[in-house]
Length: 303
Length: 288
Image (cartoon, rainbow over all chains, first blue to last red; front, top):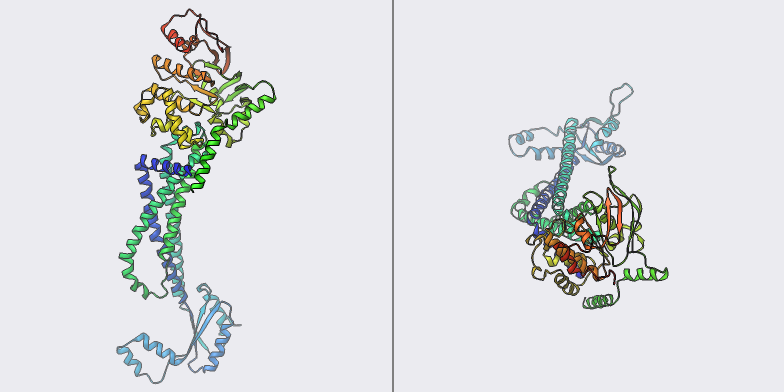
C-alpha cells in the first residue's frame, strides 16, 4: 500500500519537475484525441450515407405495356430465382403513374399529365441486388445472350431493362474512392498521433536517463523504476483525453445538437454514439500513453 | 484496510528483529564448509569491450571481510572496469567474479538488483539524483529495498550525522560543494550497512584537503566491519595510508602488497594528518 503511494508521489514529482515537457505531452494528447474524436463520427456517418446511396441502386425491368398482372408476377417469380437478387418489387401501370405524378409535383407539367388519354406507362419490376456490385450479373441473367449473339430476355413480356449502368458505375467508383481515402487518412492520423505521443514521452524519459541509471546502480528493480513512469504516462493520458472529451462535449452541445433536425432529413443517418465515442477515445489515449512510457523506458533500463 | 496496515507493520518489525536473509544464508554455507569465502574473489577475470579493447586481463585476487584495499594505477588501466565488474555493470568475457562465494555472472537478471543493494557504491561524479534533496537521495536507497517510512525517518538523519551533513538535510545537490556531494553519495552507499563498499575515484574531483576528509570517512566505515575497496590514481596518498594496494597497469595486476607504503618516518603534513585520524602509525598493529 505504501508502495502505491510512493509511486504516485514519484510520478507527481516528476510531472512537477518537468512541467514543460509534461505540458507538451498533454497538449499532444488533447489535439490527437480531438482530431480522432471528430474524425471517427465523420467516417462512420459518411460510410452509412454511402451505404444508403448504394442500396438505392436497382435494376428496372420494364414489361410490355399490354402485359397482364399475372404474366408480370410470373416474370417476377423467375427473376426472384436469380442469384444475388435480394428483393423485387412490382410496379403496376397505375402505381407508375402515381410515382410520376408525385415526382412532377404541381405545375404546368402536372396539367400536361392530366391531358393524357389513358396510361401510357408500362408496368415494371424493380430488382434490388444483395450488393450493388452484382447488378451486372443480374442483368446478364435477365437478358442472356441468345443463340445468334443478340441479347434475348428470359420472357417475351420483358420489353427493356434499365440499368442506369453509367450512373451506378459512377456512384460505385466515387463511394469506393471516398471509402479508401477516408480509411487511408484515418490510418495516417492514428500513426501520426501514436508517433507524436511516443516521441514526447521519449524526450521526457531521455532527459532523465541519468536518473534511471543511478536508480539501477543503487539496486532498484526494473518495475520499481518503471511504475512511476507508467503512472506519469497514465496521468498525462487521462488529463489530455479528459480535456479533449470536454472540448468535444462543448462542441457537440453548441454546434451539432442544434443541427440534429437537419441530419434527420438524410434518411437512415446514423453515427457512433457519444458515450461509446468518448469511451474509445479515453481508452486509446490512456493505453497509448502508459504503454508509450513503459516501452520507451526499456532502452534505458539496460544498465 | 486497517488490518492490512497493522499486519504490514508487524511484518516490518519481525524483519527488523532478524538479520537480513542474505547474510544468514552466507553464514550457513560458511559454517558447513569451514572458512568463510572471501567477500570478493576474482579468478582470471578478463573484460573485452566491444571493439576489442581489453579492459582488464586475467586479474585474480581475493578480498577478505573487513579489509580496506586500494586499486591504483594510471587513468585507463582498468580500475573502473574492475569496480564495474563487481556490480555487474560489465561482465567478464572469461573468468569468474565471486561475491561472498557466489559467481555473480551466473545470477539470474532478476536477482541483480538484490546484489547491488548489498554493495554500496561511490562514484567519482557522485551520481546523485539532481532533483531530490539530500534526505531524499539517501532515502531512495531505503525506498528501493521497501524500507518503511519509520525506518527511513530513523536511519537517514543518523547516517547524515555520521558523514557530517546534519545541517544540509534539505539542500539540493547543486547547492553543495564537491566534498559535501561526495559525503551524500557515501551516506547513500552506506545507509543499508552493506557488507561491501566500492569507491571509484571518490576523491578524483576533490582538492587534497577535502580528499583527506573523504578518506577518513571511508576508513571510519571500514572500522564498522564493512569491506572497502577504493580505486584511485592518487598513488601518493594511498602509499601513505599503509593499506593493501593492488596496482593495475594496462589491465593487468602488476603489484599486490598487504601493507604498501613508504617508510614510517614519512613526515609530510598530509600523511601525518591522515594517519592521526586513522590511528595508524608507530605501534598500531593492523587488524587488532
